[in-house]
Image (cartoon, rainbow over all chains, first blue to last red; front, side, top):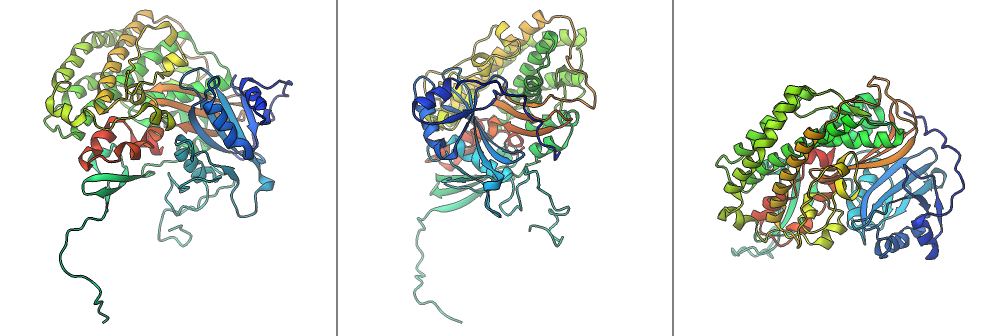
Amino acid sequence: MSETPAAKPPEEPKGPGLCGQFLKDHGIATNRLADSCGVETIEIDGAHLEAAMKLLRGSSEIKLDYLVAVSGVDSADTFDSVYQLWSYTNNNELIIKVRVKKTDVVEGQLPLVPSLSRFWSAANWHERETYDLVGIRYYGHPYLRRILNVWDWDGHPLRRDYKQLVDSLNDKAPGSFR
Amino acid sequence: MATDTEVDLTPRLKTDEMLINMGPQHPATHGVLRLILTLDGEIVRHTEPILGHLHRAQEWQGQNRTWFQYQALIDRVDYLSGMFTSWAMARAAEVVDGCEVPERAEYLRVMVSEMNRITSHLLWLGTYLIDLGAMFGFPFYPFREREKLLELFEEIAGQRMMFNYIRIGGVMRNPKDAWLSKLKKFTEEFPDRVDEYEAIVTENPIFLKRTKGIGILRKELGMDYGITGPSIRASGVDIDLRRTKPYSVYPKLKFDVPVNDRDGDTFDRYIFRIREMRQSNEIIKQCLDMLPQGEISGKKQIAGLRVKAGEGFAAVESPRGTLGCYIISNGSDRAYRIKWRNPSFCNLSILPELLKNHPIADVMAIFGSIDVILPDVDR
């Protein structure tokens, strides 16, 4: 369980894909990663995420207006926030990853990624869920509260270093979170 | 004891907003959902859903159980349409792994999944009428047909609801000829049964009064919230993965996807599910005719089942919408990360918008019409 994903096969040099090129034309730098099962995957800096999402969603040619899911991944040395984008009208697909290096996270604080929920309602609950389970703090979120676990739960269960107290659900146990 | 002389003790009518807790043990919440309603008189002004009463850490289990163990567990993610949750994970694992699925297995998958879509919609139909207050026994009509399908499921998978039938690489068991002929008989009589439900419900004046013009879902709002499934098709968005991102053998089958031409209300969401059931029945008929001979699994079903390293996302069209599964595998016997994209979770997030400015009596009519199943929300 504590193993990290095996090293990816060496990447062949690839030019930017459809969406990467589109973002480049609008002055947003992206880093193309290995395609995941044939779907264009790009890495983007957190600072540009909001602008990039607005462009991708609003443009009439790309029109990625369907935010399928936001997932959090605790990778080997980064926290990834992964966005699956589809379209209601065409067949475009895109995966966007925002990576926060574990070394950049201040001790005792959570990694920070900008929230999309101010202009995209679909992101609201997905971001709450990722905050709850993986512990990524989406700044600018209107109501970032635990959604699946109870509000006073301790820690973030899908972190690799998460350890649940054996008796955490028994409120008589001294180490219980209640 | 201090006395407060400022307090006005004259009786008066309270007009301020009132907080009301609905659930979690409410019979019409299809599981355990708690809604905190802010009421102005009997008009709902604000809703806050509280989730997580059925949280079973399914994603955590995915990282800590082997693929083979986890396959048996995921039917519980959405217990009314277990075939689809199995299929979503199987598809995701197959695209990551790159293994081939035999054609016979694909046909069997489509067949059992469409049966499952019918059972899911039938259960929705029965319980929805109870949500609306029709306690006169109507639910027994759809449950009669559902029972027949559940018996067929029991025969082929050994279980009535937690099938574990669709496996990574194929399906578990070959159906017998007697099973196929029983299913054929069912498909022949099913359209008449749907006519029966419609005769009771569709033009019923009480039903129409409770549903027409209630809970109108605007197309743009639905797309903003990422709504999928019959709920958004009833509002005029043409998205059905079986057609827009075709998978399995769906391109070879002929079927219609009913799409509305205006913003749908509660009644539209009812009628589109009815139409979907008829289409599913047609799909099953075609599958029965086209079912080829051959292998049923492209991967050995052993306890040490492994999936090659990689990551991928795959989705299927479940009765509630896009059911997706995002897998990161490191080539070991268990997943590095499994993320579920559940249609109920996403569809439920729109509930506060739909309930706004509706009387409290319509809460369950609207909530029932988006067909949410709580284990699928909380996993």
